[in-house]
Length: 79
Image (tube, rainbow, N blue to C red; front, side):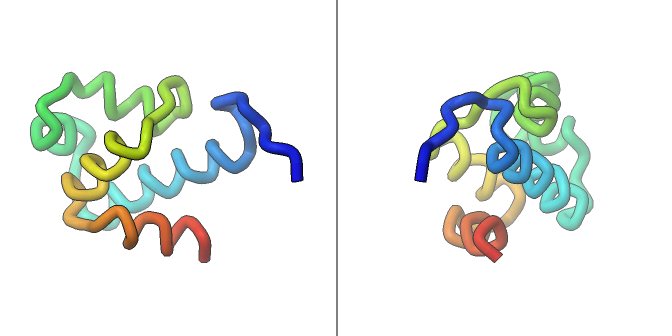
């Protein structure tokens, strides 16, 4: 299996869509998530649109801001 490195890979775009969906399920705005993370709203917008790539530590912080664990996010991603 070849690993596609682009932030525009289909798999990464699927993760971005999932994070947006999870935020909406939590009934949170981008502004609320950004405030919980201590970052500008544009940070949330950029990772949701795939313009910015999250590392695993940041993904964990995003998960917690959404009231989830990293495992919860990964389980949903793998489903």
